[in-house]
Image 1: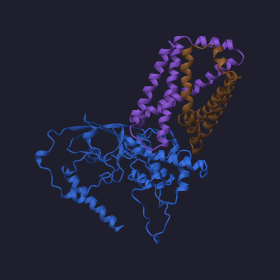
Image 2: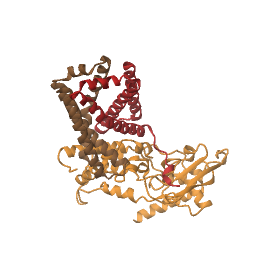
Image 3: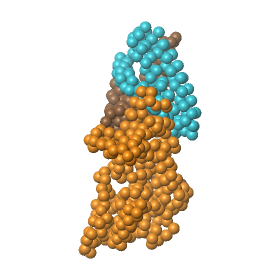
Image 4: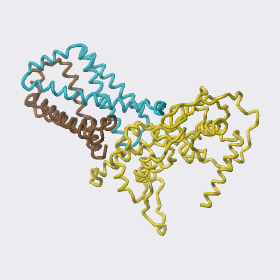
Length: 117
Length: 296
Length: 108
């Protein structure tokens, strides 16, 4: 048995906030090239772009779009929180701020979902 | 040196008295204030508690201790539960009464030397100032060596990488004057002094280093303690080593690797905030880089 | 991450705070209006503002994401810092090229 298995002090709110920031960043990095490829369809083939826009009317795609909105905003707000920590005087209550950032992101994504359906 | 000897002897006398009569231990819980001192004479002079103030029902603790090196296993021991018992007391009991081959490290037993940190029920803690009552409500303790450091044997880790990084971060004071010069006056309320004050009480226990996941991911990362130390020196007006220090903490593995998890702050037994110190270093190095004073 | 990468990543991050906020507003507007490809292109074609806005956005995101991908690879993959840096750079260049092409496609 190796010792590392017995460390369980990870998983705190701010540790999770950093993980969410990283994973949302990775997901956006994977999504962006695809996003750019789709937009480039407009270069010569507006009809293809239209076909793609119609494809995005499917419920599952709309759900995925709402998830992307969540990822974008949670990465934005998480990033703002880190920028404030790094560039301004220290302020306590970071756990609350991180939770707030995730909550706001979820609410905005939910509003997006309601609007597109 | 002689003075130190005498002080050590005093401490030993004091500790001997403590171990002879566990009831005279100071009753307060883990220190939460930034700093406190236990006055040896005061403890020695305090009267033992009367018999009727002993705990009502002393029971047994189930204590799992890591035995072996990196590969090993937890072995369970039964240790009597005592009043005002610390985690270090529990480990010491096992070593003195059950298995003398148990290896662990401690020195002062009063939260000053920083040598007794271990992983207690999954969290890094200083064991001498951690009361059993606080961490083992269920009567169970699992104690292992600190994480992120090589295990020597049982509960003892090799602290060399930790102190090596302290050196790498230029954690040693670089004097700007000689003893022939006058002592510089530092205003206690100057911003630099306040920043240094907030971070200066670190006792090098390694708890923050063990709590930091960035240390685990990034072998080159200097870690919270060394960077926190660098921050105190950067704010020390008497220090002359800041060019090299900023260069050291701005390199790969320096302050910019920090993810602001704040685990260091959460676990620091002295309630210091290395995350804030590291944020200060990030600002200072970024500014120096933009001014062209630093080479990446 | 050294201080040079740190400054570039945080500077592009700060630059993108307003850019992303506006982009989210545009996403909400565009989905609400249920715009067709022709509708979108009618708004963007020949517009210097759209070109400058999204051109800046693509440049910032390429730098920001390249450094981010490099950091993730350096910490979470067995790759060395140097190899992670090279892969990050490659990713950034691909992203910048695809992004520039997309901006040109909707603006020109």
